[in-house]
Image (tube, rainbow, N blue to C red):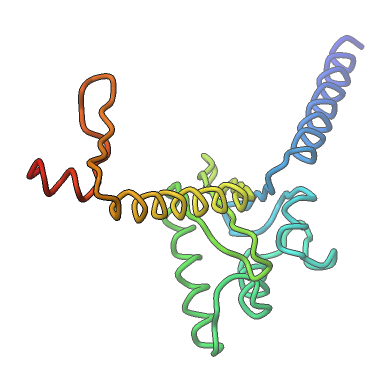
Length: 185
């Protein structure tokens, strides 16, 4: 009686926790994939599927992650491979990395133009949890800022007046060509 009640209660609690975790993962803005120690897909969220435009039938529990890499490469989603040999070499490189079990962070531009920050963290059982964040807007802002800074540099370097910016600690942060020539800095 009492043992059965405890087991039922623990089982119900475990199911509730699993459902809570599933809902939390599903509502993240990042794509998430979980791969087991045998390099098979065991969990993912809708955003992961959207980012890579995976067909429903491709994402199944137990699907070898190699199939997903190969799909991405052959469909031009990631990388620009002209031969099957190049695809297989890139695939083997990724699988070797997973086998090493080390954390990684990289950026990748998809054929759709989306820039992803990809962060992989090994799990204690040998699998991986990987997050995929769309950082396209950050990259665009970074490019716009760099272009703006270059334009300001062109303008300030082509005026005869000396221009310098000194921060509150009295360190030079910016000087133009006229300042550099005159002050020999």
